[in-house]
Picture: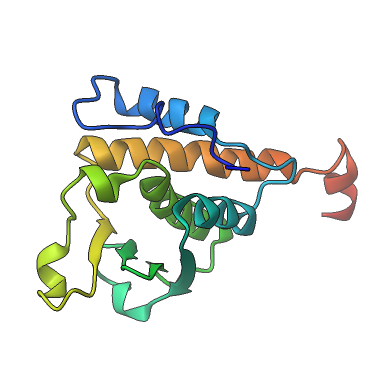
Length: 165
């Protein structure tokens, strides 16, 4: 069973919906589990894209304008994020890169860092740094929805978190 209902609601070339509308449509098309987590979203995207996704922090991104990087290769996808002590910041960065995959931006957008990779066929890359274009805005809006789903699906019954932290 395909865990993503349809790609018809996702962004496509010539899509005249706002980035927020594209994000909401893509989020609505997802078949998320009851308990949403980064691993469950990764699994869903892996199954949909028929590829393996690896996620790692990279000290090389620290101090740069880029806080997240998605490298789409022929055999797998790699997500790199800045080193951070904040779990919420890490989730937002990773969900932003996963959102690019869900929105299939590798099929419809020009990669932001393609020139940095050379011409050896290593793949194409998208970096999370500039939120002025529609692809970045749509990915960030979808990342907001995904991280919200993570937070709301893992909350314990009212009062429990306050007592046990």
